[in-house]
Image (tube, rainbow, N blue to C red; front, top):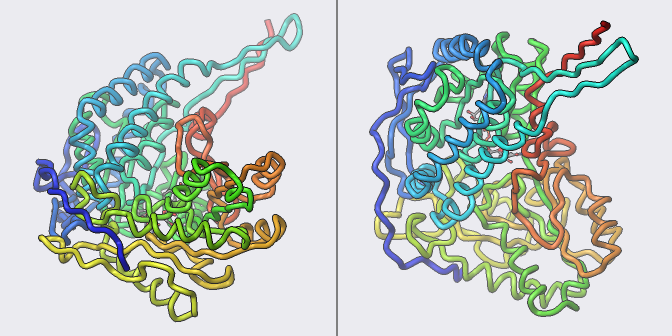
Length: 499
Ligand code: NAD
Protein backbone atom coordinates (compact mmCIF):
# COMPACT_ATOMS: atom_id res chain seq x y z
CA UNK A 1 0.00 0.00 0.00
CA UNK A 2 2.11 2.81 -1.30
CA UNK A 3 -0.65 5.31 -2.07
CA UNK A 4 0.78 8.82 -2.28
CA UNK A 5 -0.47 11.35 0.27
CA UNK A 6 -1.01 14.99 -0.61
CA UNK A 7 1.31 17.40 1.18
CA UNK A 8 0.09 20.81 0.04
CA UNK A 9 -1.89 23.11 2.35
CA UNK A 10 -5.65 23.18 1.82
CA UNK A 11 -7.16 26.40 0.53
CA UNK A 12 -9.64 28.20 2.80
CA UNK A 13 -13.02 26.71 3.54
CA UNK A 14 -15.86 28.57 1.84
CA UNK A 15 -18.07 30.83 3.95
CA UNK A 16 -21.63 29.60 4.03
CA UNK A 17 -24.65 29.98 6.30
CA UNK A 18 -24.96 27.78 9.37
CA UNK A 19 -28.38 26.57 8.38
CA UNK A 20 -30.53 26.42 5.24
CA UNK A 21 -34.31 26.44 4.97
CA UNK A 22 -36.29 25.02 2.06
CA UNK A 23 -36.67 27.15 -1.05
CA UNK A 24 -40.38 27.19 -1.90
CA UNK A 25 -42.37 29.64 -4.01
CA UNK A 26 -39.38 31.95 -4.36
CA UNK A 27 -38.89 32.24 -0.60
CA UNK A 28 -36.89 30.63 2.18
CA UNK A 29 -39.35 28.55 4.18
CA UNK A 30 -38.65 26.96 7.58
CA UNK A 31 -39.45 23.23 7.79
CA UNK A 32 -42.95 22.63 9.13
CA UNK A 33 -41.49 20.22 11.72
CA UNK A 34 -39.14 22.96 12.92
CA UNK A 35 -36.33 20.41 12.62
CA UNK A 36 -32.96 20.64 10.89
CA UNK A 37 -30.39 17.92 10.36
CA UNK A 38 -26.64 18.11 10.55
CA UNK A 39 -24.73 17.90 7.27
CA UNK A 40 -21.45 16.16 8.06
CA UNK A 41 -18.48 16.95 5.84
CA UNK A 42 -16.77 13.70 4.79
CA UNK A 43 -13.44 15.52 4.81
CA UNK A 44 -13.14 15.46 8.59
CA UNK A 45 -16.40 13.96 9.86
CA UNK A 46 -17.40 17.32 11.33
CA UNK A 47 -20.72 19.18 10.92
CA UNK A 48 -20.55 21.54 7.99
CA UNK A 49 -24.02 23.12 7.97
CA UNK A 50 -27.60 22.23 8.78
CA UNK A 51 -30.42 21.50 6.35
CA UNK A 52 -34.17 21.65 6.82
CA UNK A 53 -35.69 18.27 7.60
CA UNK A 54 -38.49 18.15 5.05
CA UNK A 55 -41.68 16.13 5.34
CA UNK A 56 -44.97 15.66 3.46
CA UNK A 57 -46.29 19.04 4.54
CA UNK A 58 -43.24 20.82 3.08
CA UNK A 59 -43.39 18.76 -0.10
CA UNK A 60 -47.11 19.55 -0.53
CA UNK A 61 -46.37 23.24 -0.04
CA UNK A 62 -43.71 23.09 -2.74
CA UNK A 63 -45.97 21.21 -5.14
CA UNK A 64 -48.70 23.78 -4.53
CA UNK A 65 -46.25 26.63 -5.24
CA UNK A 66 -45.18 24.90 -8.45
CA UNK A 67 -48.81 24.48 -9.54
CA UNK A 68 -49.44 28.16 -8.93
CA UNK A 69 -46.45 29.09 -11.06
CA UNK A 70 -47.13 26.64 -13.89
CA UNK A 71 -49.96 28.33 -15.86
CA UNK A 72 -47.92 31.44 -16.43
CA UNK A 73 -44.46 29.80 -16.70
CA UNK A 74 -45.73 27.26 -19.24
CA UNK A 75 -46.89 30.13 -21.47
CA UNK A 76 -43.63 32.07 -21.39
CA UNK A 77 -41.85 32.14 -24.71
CA UNK A 78 -38.92 29.84 -25.37
CA UNK A 79 -36.88 33.02 -25.85
CA UNK A 80 -37.70 34.15 -22.33
CA UNK A 81 -36.95 30.79 -20.73
CA UNK A 82 -33.72 30.65 -22.69
CA UNK A 83 -32.71 34.08 -21.40
CA UNK A 84 -33.32 33.04 -17.79
CA UNK A 85 -31.40 29.76 -18.14
CA UNK A 86 -28.49 31.71 -19.59
CA UNK A 87 -28.68 34.10 -16.67
CA UNK A 88 -28.46 31.17 -14.24
CA UNK A 89 -25.41 29.92 -16.15
CA UNK A 90 -23.79 33.37 -15.96
CA UNK A 91 -24.37 33.61 -12.20
CA UNK A 92 -22.92 30.14 -11.65
CA UNK A 93 -19.92 31.08 -13.79
CA UNK A 94 -19.32 34.26 -11.75
CA UNK A 95 -19.46 32.20 -8.54
CA UNK A 96 -17.74 29.13 -9.90
CA UNK A 97 -14.84 28.97 -7.45
CA UNK A 98 -17.12 29.45 -4.44
CA UNK A 99 -19.54 26.75 -5.61
CA UNK A 100 -16.67 24.37 -6.43
CA UNK A 101 -15.36 24.71 -2.89
CA UNK A 102 -18.81 24.25 -1.32
CA UNK A 103 -19.35 21.15 -3.47
CA UNK A 104 -15.96 19.84 -2.34
CA UNK A 105 -16.73 20.25 1.35
CA UNK A 106 -20.23 18.86 0.91
CA UNK A 107 -19.26 15.78 -1.07
CA UNK A 108 -15.58 15.18 -0.27
CA UNK A 109 -14.31 15.06 -3.86
CA UNK A 110 -11.06 16.80 -4.77
CA UNK A 111 -11.31 20.51 -5.60
CA UNK A 112 -9.32 19.99 -8.79
CA UNK A 113 -12.21 17.78 -10.00
CA UNK A 114 -15.05 20.10 -8.96
CA UNK A 115 -13.20 22.94 -10.67
CA UNK A 116 -12.32 21.05 -13.82
CA UNK A 117 -15.42 18.92 -14.29
CA UNK A 118 -18.48 19.50 -12.09
CA UNK A 119 -18.87 23.28 -12.35
CA UNK A 120 -17.96 23.70 -16.05
CA UNK A 121 -20.42 20.90 -16.91
CA UNK A 122 -23.17 22.51 -14.80
CA UNK A 123 -22.68 25.85 -16.59
CA UNK A 124 -22.53 24.28 -20.04
CA UNK A 125 -25.64 22.24 -19.35
CA UNK A 126 -27.76 25.30 -18.57
CA UNK A 127 -26.39 27.01 -21.70
CA UNK A 128 -27.02 23.96 -23.84
CA UNK A 129 -30.71 23.78 -22.90
CA UNK A 130 -31.00 27.56 -23.21
CA UNK A 131 -29.86 27.12 -26.82
CA UNK A 132 -31.73 24.04 -27.93
CA UNK A 133 -35.09 25.28 -26.69
CA UNK A 134 -34.80 28.15 -29.20
CA UNK A 135 -34.23 25.83 -32.14
CA UNK A 136 -36.85 23.24 -31.31
CA UNK A 137 -40.08 24.71 -32.68
CA UNK A 138 -43.43 23.05 -33.05
CA UNK A 139 -44.16 21.88 -36.59
CA UNK A 140 -46.88 22.55 -39.14
CA UNK A 141 -47.61 20.39 -42.16
CA UNK A 142 -50.37 20.36 -44.75
CA UNK A 143 -52.64 17.34 -44.80
CA UNK A 144 -54.54 18.44 -47.91
CA UNK A 145 -55.41 21.77 -49.44
CA UNK A 146 -58.07 22.37 -46.77
CA UNK A 147 -56.42 20.87 -43.71
CA UNK A 148 -53.26 21.61 -41.79
CA UNK A 149 -51.73 19.54 -39.04
CA UNK A 150 -50.07 21.35 -36.18
CA UNK A 151 -47.88 19.35 -33.80
CA UNK A 152 -47.55 21.50 -30.72
CA UNK A 153 -45.24 20.81 -27.77
CA UNK A 154 -46.75 21.43 -24.35
CA UNK A 155 -44.85 21.11 -21.06
CA UNK A 156 -45.92 18.13 -18.93
CA UNK A 157 -46.69 20.20 -15.84
CA UNK A 158 -45.24 20.05 -12.34
CA UNK A 159 -42.52 17.42 -12.01
CA UNK A 160 -40.67 15.83 -9.07
CA UNK A 161 -36.90 15.35 -9.31
CA UNK A 162 -34.91 13.23 -6.84
CA UNK A 163 -31.14 13.65 -6.75
CA UNK A 164 -28.20 11.49 -5.52
CA UNK A 165 -25.13 12.65 -3.59
CA UNK A 166 -22.28 11.77 -5.93
CA UNK A 167 -22.48 14.87 -8.18
CA UNK A 168 -24.93 16.96 -6.19
CA UNK A 169 -24.96 20.05 -8.43
CA UNK A 170 -24.45 18.31 -11.74
CA UNK A 171 -27.10 15.61 -11.24
CA UNK A 172 -29.56 18.32 -10.16
CA UNK A 173 -28.67 20.36 -13.25
CA UNK A 174 -29.19 17.39 -15.56
CA UNK A 175 -32.81 17.40 -14.41
CA UNK A 176 -33.54 21.06 -13.73
CA UNK A 177 -32.22 22.58 -16.97
CA UNK A 178 -34.30 20.52 -19.45
CA UNK A 179 -37.43 20.66 -17.26
CA UNK A 180 -37.33 24.47 -17.07
CA UNK A 181 -36.40 24.78 -20.75
CA UNK A 182 -39.45 22.68 -21.65
CA UNK A 183 -41.72 24.93 -19.54
CA UNK A 184 -42.27 22.61 -16.55
CA UNK A 185 -42.14 23.71 -12.92
CA UNK A 186 -40.23 21.47 -10.56
CA UNK A 187 -39.84 20.32 -6.97
CA UNK A 188 -36.32 19.04 -6.35
CA UNK A 189 -35.30 16.77 -3.46
CA UNK A 190 -31.48 16.66 -3.04
CA UNK A 191 -29.77 13.75 -1.28
CA UNK A 192 -29.63 14.02 2.52
CA UNK A 193 -25.86 13.42 2.44
CA UNK A 194 -25.25 16.53 0.29
CA UNK A 195 -28.03 19.07 0.84
CA UNK A 196 -25.87 22.19 0.99
CA UNK A 197 -24.35 23.03 -2.39
CA UNK A 198 -27.72 23.26 -4.13
CA UNK A 199 -28.99 25.60 -1.39
CA UNK A 200 -25.96 27.82 -1.89
CA UNK A 201 -26.81 27.84 -5.58
CA UNK A 202 -30.43 28.75 -4.77
CA UNK A 203 -29.16 31.70 -2.71
CA UNK A 204 -27.37 32.96 -5.80
CA UNK A 205 -30.23 32.51 -8.25
CA UNK A 206 -33.19 33.11 -5.91
CA UNK A 207 -34.49 36.10 -7.87
CA UNK A 208 -33.89 34.88 -11.40
CA UNK A 209 -36.99 32.76 -11.95
CA UNK A 210 -40.64 33.58 -11.19
CA UNK A 211 -41.62 32.31 -7.71
CA UNK A 212 -42.60 28.62 -7.63
CA UNK A 213 -40.91 27.61 -10.89
CA UNK A 214 -37.99 25.93 -9.11
CA UNK A 215 -38.51 24.67 -5.54
CA UNK A 216 -36.03 22.73 -3.42
CA UNK A 217 -37.03 20.73 -0.35
CA UNK A 218 -34.26 19.01 1.61
CA UNK A 219 -34.70 15.93 3.77
CA UNK A 220 -34.42 12.16 3.98
CA UNK A 221 -35.64 9.66 1.38
CA UNK A 222 -38.59 8.12 3.25
CA UNK A 223 -39.64 11.45 4.86
CA UNK A 224 -39.32 13.90 1.96
CA UNK A 225 -38.55 11.78 -1.14
CA UNK A 226 -41.50 9.42 -0.69
CA UNK A 227 -44.23 12.08 -0.38
CA UNK A 228 -42.80 13.66 -3.53
CA UNK A 229 -42.70 10.43 -5.52
CA UNK A 230 -46.17 9.38 -4.32
CA UNK A 231 -47.86 12.71 -4.93
CA UNK A 232 -50.86 12.45 -7.28
CA UNK A 233 -50.25 16.07 -8.32
CA UNK A 234 -47.09 15.42 -10.36
CA UNK A 235 -46.92 14.90 -14.12
CA UNK A 236 -43.61 13.01 -13.95
CA UNK A 237 -41.01 11.70 -11.51
CA UNK A 238 -37.36 11.74 -12.50
CA UNK A 239 -35.04 9.79 -10.27
CA UNK A 240 -31.31 9.20 -10.07
CA UNK A 241 -30.03 6.81 -7.44
CA UNK A 242 -29.72 3.18 -6.55
CA UNK A 243 -31.53 0.45 -8.44
CA UNK A 244 -33.29 -0.73 -5.26
CA UNK A 245 -34.63 2.78 -4.55
CA UNK A 246 -35.62 3.08 -8.22
CA UNK A 247 -37.86 0.02 -7.85
CA UNK A 248 -39.70 1.70 -4.97
CA UNK A 249 -40.10 4.97 -6.85
CA UNK A 250 -41.59 3.12 -9.83
CA UNK A 251 -44.11 1.45 -7.56
CA UNK A 252 -45.10 4.82 -6.13
CA UNK A 253 -45.42 6.42 -9.55
CA UNK A 254 -47.43 3.51 -10.95
CA UNK A 255 -50.21 4.33 -8.47
CA UNK A 256 -50.53 7.71 -10.15
CA UNK A 257 -49.85 6.43 -13.66
CA UNK A 258 -47.18 9.02 -14.32
CA UNK A 259 -44.04 8.55 -16.42
CA UNK A 260 -40.71 8.03 -14.69
CA UNK A 261 -37.09 8.45 -15.70
CA UNK A 262 -34.75 6.05 -13.95
CA UNK A 263 -31.03 6.73 -13.83
CA UNK A 264 -29.72 3.88 -11.72
CA UNK A 265 -26.58 1.96 -10.85
CA UNK A 266 -23.82 0.43 -12.93
CA UNK A 267 -20.90 -2.00 -13.04
CA UNK A 268 -19.18 -0.78 -16.15
CA UNK A 269 -16.63 -2.90 -18.01
CA UNK A 270 -13.51 -1.20 -19.35
CA UNK A 271 -12.09 -3.45 -22.07
CA UNK A 272 -8.44 -3.38 -23.16
CA UNK A 273 -7.83 -5.29 -26.39
CA UNK A 274 -4.50 -6.83 -27.39
CA UNK A 275 -3.74 -4.00 -29.82
CA UNK A 276 -3.33 -1.59 -26.87
CA UNK A 277 0.16 -2.99 -26.30
CA UNK A 278 1.08 -2.83 -30.02
CA UNK A 279 0.19 0.86 -30.18
CA UNK A 280 2.56 3.79 -29.75
CA UNK A 281 3.54 4.84 -26.23
CA UNK A 282 1.18 7.79 -26.22
CA UNK A 283 -1.86 5.59 -26.85
CA UNK A 284 -0.68 2.96 -24.37
CA UNK A 285 -0.28 5.63 -21.66
CA UNK A 286 -3.72 7.05 -22.48
CA UNK A 287 -5.23 3.59 -22.10
CA UNK A 288 -3.48 3.17 -18.73
CA UNK A 289 -4.96 6.50 -17.58
CA UNK A 290 -8.34 5.25 -18.83
CA UNK A 291 -8.03 2.23 -16.54
CA UNK A 292 -7.01 4.36 -13.55
CA UNK A 293 -10.18 6.44 -13.96
CA UNK A 294 -11.92 3.96 -11.66
CA UNK A 295 -10.68 6.20 -8.83
CA UNK A 296 -12.06 9.47 -10.23
CA UNK A 297 -14.59 11.04 -7.87
CA UNK A 298 -13.48 8.35 -5.33
CA UNK A 299 -15.17 5.81 -7.62
CA UNK A 300 -18.54 7.35 -6.81
CA UNK A 301 -19.65 7.59 -10.40
CA UNK A 302 -22.55 5.58 -11.76
CA UNK A 303 -20.45 4.81 -14.86
CA UNK A 304 -17.31 4.12 -12.80
CA UNK A 305 -15.18 1.76 -14.95
CA UNK A 306 -15.21 -0.72 -12.09
CA UNK A 307 -14.32 -3.86 -14.08
CA UNK A 308 -11.11 -3.99 -16.10
CA UNK A 309 -11.19 -6.68 -18.79
CA UNK A 310 -7.71 -7.05 -20.27
CA UNK A 311 -6.44 -9.40 -22.99
CA UNK A 312 -4.35 -12.09 -21.31
CA UNK A 313 -1.35 -11.47 -23.60
CA UNK A 314 -0.96 -7.88 -22.40
CA UNK A 315 -2.00 -8.39 -18.78
CA UNK A 316 1.51 -8.16 -17.26
CA UNK A 317 2.79 -5.16 -19.16
CA UNK A 318 -0.51 -3.28 -18.89
CA UNK A 319 -1.35 -3.95 -15.26
CA UNK A 320 2.16 -3.18 -14.05
CA UNK A 321 1.65 0.36 -15.33
CA UNK A 322 -1.93 0.61 -14.01
CA UNK A 323 -0.79 -0.38 -10.51
CA UNK A 324 2.10 2.09 -10.67
CA UNK A 325 -0.23 4.93 -11.71
CA UNK A 326 -2.84 3.95 -9.11
CA UNK A 327 -0.25 4.12 -6.36
CA UNK A 328 0.70 7.60 -7.59
CA UNK A 329 -2.82 8.98 -7.00
CA UNK A 330 -2.45 11.64 -4.34
CA UNK A 331 -4.96 11.16 -1.56
CA UNK A 332 -5.50 13.99 0.89
CA UNK A 333 -7.44 17.07 1.94
CA UNK A 334 -9.90 17.63 -0.92
CA UNK A 335 -9.31 21.38 -0.82
CA UNK A 336 -5.52 21.00 -1.25
CA UNK A 337 -4.40 21.98 -4.73
CA UNK A 338 -2.46 18.79 -5.43
CA UNK A 339 -4.98 16.31 -4.02
CA UNK A 340 -6.21 13.95 -6.72
CA UNK A 341 -8.59 11.86 -4.64
CA UNK A 342 -10.64 12.94 -1.64
CA UNK A 343 -13.01 11.31 0.84
CA UNK A 344 -15.99 8.99 0.31
CA UNK A 345 -19.14 11.09 0.54
CA UNK A 346 -20.57 9.72 3.79
CA UNK A 347 -19.81 7.41 6.68
CA UNK A 348 -22.33 4.87 5.34
CA UNK A 349 -20.63 4.86 1.96
CA UNK A 350 -17.20 4.57 3.60
CA UNK A 351 -18.36 1.57 5.64
CA UNK A 352 -19.95 0.02 2.57
CA UNK A 353 -16.73 0.25 0.55
CA UNK A 354 -14.68 -1.14 3.46
CA UNK A 355 -17.09 -4.06 3.71
CA UNK A 356 -16.51 -4.82 0.01
CA UNK A 357 -12.75 -4.79 0.57
CA UNK A 358 -13.35 -7.55 3.10
CA UNK A 359 -15.75 -9.40 0.80
CA UNK A 360 -13.13 -9.32 -1.98
CA UNK A 361 -10.45 -10.75 0.28
CA UNK A 362 -12.85 -13.35 1.74
CA UNK A 363 -13.93 -14.60 -1.66
CA UNK A 364 -10.31 -15.13 -2.64
CA UNK A 365 -9.66 -12.22 -4.99
CA UNK A 366 -5.99 -11.32 -5.31
CA UNK A 367 -5.22 -7.87 -3.92
CA UNK A 368 -2.93 -5.98 -6.32
CA UNK A 369 -2.85 -2.66 -4.47
CA UNK A 370 -4.72 -0.65 -1.80
CA UNK A 371 -7.25 -2.75 0.06
CA UNK A 372 -7.61 -0.65 3.19
CA UNK A 373 -8.59 2.70 4.60
CA UNK A 374 -6.08 5.51 4.46
CA UNK A 375 -5.12 6.99 7.80
CA UNK A 376 -4.59 10.67 7.18
CA UNK A 377 -3.56 13.13 9.88
CA UNK A 378 -3.63 16.91 10.39
CA UNK A 379 -7.32 17.03 11.27
CA UNK A 380 -8.43 14.45 8.72
CA UNK A 381 -8.31 11.50 11.13
CA UNK A 382 -12.11 11.19 11.15
CA UNK A 383 -12.58 11.69 7.39
CA UNK A 384 -13.67 8.87 5.09
CA UNK A 385 -10.54 8.05 3.09
CA UNK A 386 -9.89 4.76 1.31
CA UNK A 387 -6.82 3.74 -0.69
CA UNK A 388 -7.53 3.10 -4.37
CA UNK A 389 -7.76 -0.65 -4.68
CA UNK A 390 -7.28 -3.20 -7.44
CA UNK A 391 -8.46 -6.80 -7.10
CA UNK A 392 -7.83 -9.61 -9.56
CA UNK A 393 -10.48 -12.30 -9.78
CA UNK A 394 -13.30 -13.60 -11.97
CA UNK A 395 -16.61 -12.19 -13.03
CA UNK A 396 -18.77 -14.44 -10.86
CA UNK A 397 -17.38 -12.90 -7.68
CA UNK A 398 -19.60 -10.48 -5.76
CA UNK A 399 -17.04 -7.70 -6.13
CA UNK A 400 -17.42 -8.07 -9.93
CA UNK A 401 -21.21 -8.16 -9.86
CA UNK A 402 -22.32 -5.69 -7.17
CA UNK A 403 -22.00 -1.92 -7.37
CA UNK A 404 -19.40 -0.90 -4.77
CA UNK A 405 -19.41 2.80 -5.65
CA UNK A 406 -15.91 3.35 -4.31
CA UNK A 407 -12.29 3.45 -5.55
CA UNK A 408 -12.22 -0.28 -6.17
CA UNK A 409 -11.65 -1.94 -9.52
CA UNK A 410 -11.78 -5.65 -10.32
CA UNK A 411 -9.58 -6.99 -13.10
CA UNK A 412 -9.91 -10.17 -15.09
CA UNK A 413 -8.46 -11.48 -18.35
CA UNK A 414 -9.96 -12.73 -21.60
CA UNK A 415 -8.62 -14.70 -24.56
CA UNK A 416 -10.94 -13.64 -27.38
CA UNK A 417 -13.32 -10.84 -28.33
CA UNK A 418 -16.26 -13.21 -27.80
CA UNK A 419 -15.10 -13.95 -24.28
CA UNK A 420 -14.59 -10.24 -23.54
CA UNK A 421 -18.16 -9.52 -24.66
CA UNK A 422 -19.55 -12.39 -22.66
CA UNK A 423 -17.90 -11.10 -19.50
CA UNK A 424 -18.78 -7.46 -20.24
CA UNK A 425 -22.47 -8.28 -20.66
CA UNK A 426 -22.62 -10.73 -17.74
CA UNK A 427 -24.08 -8.19 -15.29
CA UNK A 428 -27.55 -6.96 -14.44
CA UNK A 429 -26.40 -3.41 -15.24
CA UNK A 430 -25.93 -1.67 -18.58
CA UNK A 431 -24.96 1.94 -18.00
CA UNK A 432 -21.42 2.62 -19.23
CA UNK A 433 -18.58 0.73 -20.87
CA UNK A 434 -15.14 1.48 -22.27
CA UNK A 435 -13.27 -0.03 -25.20
CA UNK A 436 -9.59 0.56 -25.92
CA UNK A 437 -8.30 -0.74 -29.21
CA UNK A 438 -6.32 0.18 -32.32
CA UNK A 439 -8.23 -2.24 -34.54
CA UNK A 440 -10.73 -0.52 -36.85
CA UNK A 441 -13.03 -3.54 -36.97
CA UNK A 442 -13.19 -3.81 -33.17
CA UNK A 443 -13.78 -0.09 -32.74
CA UNK A 444 -17.26 -0.41 -34.22
CA UNK A 445 -18.22 -4.06 -33.74
CA UNK A 446 -17.41 -4.37 -30.03
CA UNK A 447 -19.37 -1.29 -28.87
CA UNK A 448 -22.34 -2.47 -30.97
CA UNK A 449 -22.35 -5.75 -29.05
CA UNK A 450 -22.07 -4.21 -25.59
CA UNK A 451 -25.36 -3.88 -23.71
CA UNK A 452 -24.91 -0.38 -22.31
CA UNK A 453 -26.34 3.07 -22.96
CA UNK A 454 -22.95 4.74 -23.24
CA UNK A 455 -19.79 3.21 -24.69
CA UNK A 456 -16.64 5.29 -24.59
CA UNK A 457 -14.17 4.28 -27.27
CA UNK A 458 -10.53 5.15 -26.58
CA UNK A 459 -11.67 7.65 -23.94
CA UNK A 460 -13.74 7.54 -20.75
CA UNK A 461 -15.69 9.71 -18.32
CA UNK A 462 -16.62 12.62 -20.54
CA UNK A 463 -20.18 13.96 -20.27
CA UNK A 464 -20.97 16.54 -22.95
CA UNK A 465 -24.48 18.02 -22.66
CA UNK A 466 -25.31 17.01 -26.25
CA UNK A 467 -24.50 13.29 -25.81
CA UNK A 468 -27.52 11.22 -24.69
CA UNK A 469 -26.90 9.39 -21.44
CA UNK A 470 -28.79 6.56 -19.74
CA UNK A 471 -29.02 2.91 -18.93
CA UNK A 472 -29.86 -0.47 -20.44
CA UNK A 473 -31.11 -3.36 -18.31
CA UNK A 474 -31.29 -2.62 -14.55
CA UNK A 475 -29.38 0.66 -14.98
CA UNK A 476 -32.66 2.33 -15.82
CA UNK A 477 -34.50 3.86 -18.73
CA UNK A 478 -35.21 7.23 -20.18
CA UNK A 479 -32.25 9.43 -21.03
CA UNK A 480 -30.60 12.59 -19.80
CA UNK A 481 -28.62 15.20 -21.75
CA UNK A 482 -29.17 15.79 -25.50
CA UNK A 483 -32.09 17.77 -26.89
CA UNK A 484 -34.24 14.62 -26.79
CA UNK A 485 -34.65 15.49 -23.09
CA UNK A 486 -37.08 18.21 -24.03
CA UNK A 487 -39.53 15.51 -25.09
CA UNK A 488 -39.12 13.81 -21.73
CA UNK A 489 -40.63 16.93 -20.15
CA UNK A 490 -43.26 17.67 -22.81
CA UNK A 491 -46.17 16.09 -24.52
CA UNK A 492 -47.28 16.69 -28.08
CA UNK A 493 -50.69 18.01 -29.01
CA UNK A 494 -51.80 17.54 -32.55
CA UNK A 495 -54.39 19.87 -34.04
CA UNK A 496 -55.92 19.06 -37.40
CA UNK A 497 -57.50 22.26 -38.66
CA UNK A 498 -59.82 22.31 -41.61
CA UNK A 499 -60.52 25.66 -43.19
P1 NAD B 1 -30.19 6.45 -3.24
O1 NAD B 1 -31.11 5.63 -4.09
O2 NAD B 1 -29.87 5.97 -1.90
O3 NAD B 1 -30.78 7.92 -3.04
C1 NAD B 1 -31.08 8.75 -4.14
C2 NAD B 1 -32.15 9.73 -3.74
O4 NAD B 1 -33.35 9.02 -3.47
C3 NAD B 1 -31.83 10.54 -2.49
O5 NAD B 1 -32.27 11.87 -2.68
C4 NAD B 1 -32.67 9.85 -1.43
O6 NAD B 1 -33.06 10.69 -0.37
C5 NAD B 1 -33.89 9.45 -2.25
N1 NAD B 1 -34.65 8.34 -1.66
C6 NAD B 1 -34.21 7.30 -0.91
N2 NAD B 1 -35.25 6.51 -0.54
C7 NAD B 1 -36.36 7.06 -1.07
C8 NAD B 1 -37.75 6.71 -1.05
N3 NAD B 1 -38.21 5.63 -0.39
N4 NAD B 1 -38.60 7.50 -1.72
C9 NAD B 1 -38.18 8.58 -2.40
N5 NAD B 1 -36.89 8.98 -2.44
C10 NAD B 1 -36.00 8.23 -1.79
O7 NAD B 1 -28.90 6.67 -4.14
P2 NAD B 1 -27.57 7.41 -3.71
O8 NAD B 1 -26.86 6.50 -2.75
O9 NAD B 1 -27.87 8.81 -3.32
O10 NAD B 1 -26.78 7.50 -5.08
C11 NAD B 1 -25.91 6.52 -5.52
C12 NAD B 1 -26.57 5.70 -6.61
O11 NAD B 1 -26.97 6.56 -7.67
C13 NAD B 1 -25.64 4.70 -7.23
O12 NAD B 1 -26.32 3.48 -7.39
C14 NAD B 1 -25.32 5.30 -8.59
O13 NAD B 1 -24.96 4.38 -9.57
C15 NAD B 1 -26.59 6.00 -8.91
N6 NAD B 1 -26.36 7.06 -9.89
C16 NAD B 1 -26.85 6.89 -11.16
C17 NAD B 1 -26.64 7.87 -12.13
C18 NAD B 1 -27.17 7.71 -13.52
O14 NAD B 1 -27.24 8.71 -14.23
N7 NAD B 1 -27.55 6.52 -13.94
C19 NAD B 1 -25.94 9.02 -11.79
C20 NAD B 1 -25.47 9.18 -10.48
C21 NAD B 1 -25.70 8.18 -9.55
